[in-house]
Length: 82
Figure 1 (cartoon, rainbow, N blue to C red):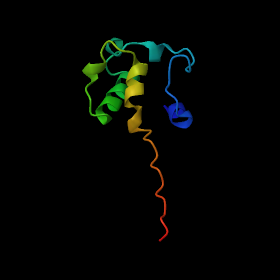
Figure 2: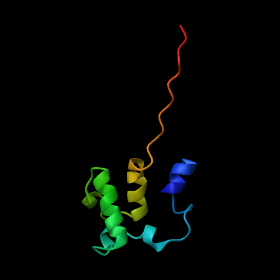
Figure 3: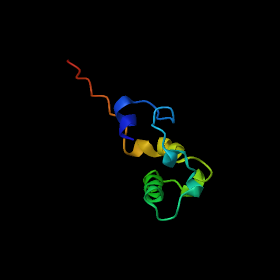
């Protein structure tokens, strides 16, 4: 998630070293595991349900919910001289 915020690019399986955790499907995760708890927390902060991501990969869940942690910076206000 940090690399998505730093490089401002969408994270894909091509950018990540081969990781089986990011390629596993959400419904195949073991209940109570660290990855399952992280997914639950991301979904809770994004105000969605975990059921929406069943059958999808963990990486897709991260891509859809990372904006909670990496919001776009606001543009600074321009001062107007009068």
